[in-house]
Image (cartoon, rainbow, N blue to C red; front, top):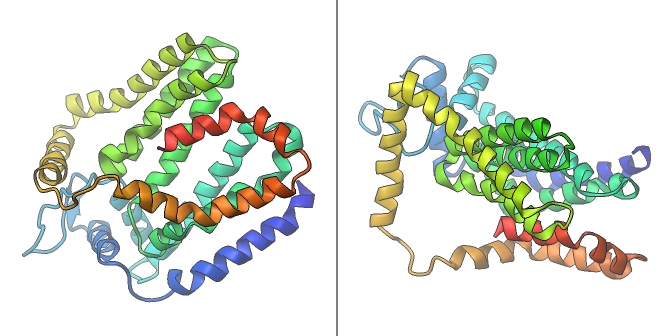
Length: 307
């Protein structure tokens, strides 16, 4: 891996050049400031994890989102005190953790000869405009991204195990990380549930039967924490029910856009620089055709899961 350090240094420098001016400056997007205020309040004894507090006159009982990201950020406020940069530091730590998870995913996806190219997915992730924007503005997606990536990483690990006992245990862990993604941002964090089954469709080494069994097991890992909360933490169920009514039902009843496929267009617009880099890399590469053929199941699975 030593020969990759110069490239990794370039990735870090490029990331800081793009994001440092906004990451370490004052001011945030309104939603991020809102989450930061609630996290600070929680850290200093105003509100509880399941009953968050904003102000005496507005959102005295905040249930607009599940509480995990706000609760984790509150820990940072407790440790580092009341500073305008605590939320930026929290977001930076999450970004680093997410990139490390991407590195581990890359190691699981490619053969040994390509593992030294781990800096390429880190580069692609670092230059996505909305990623830097979300980090600088303290968005909940920063926390959810880490749990989503962990869920996919554990999904890959479960498929690669030879013993069924190991497959089951690791897929259960993947389900728990999906639960944590849900507890961060709600239903949008559930899409990794499709990961194992989709990979079993495209990967000839994995049977559909295996994909179904591990997907059901992962679903069990997701549902077990809900069952625990239902039995032993009734205030948690009240909080999540309030979230469902305030955020999910309200958003369905009050549609603000005429075309829900707008997000697909926005996604591809964000990914244009990445497409250009990947196409140029393939055109210049010596073994591009072989690489495309070898990793066909991987990229088809990833694209399908992402969509």
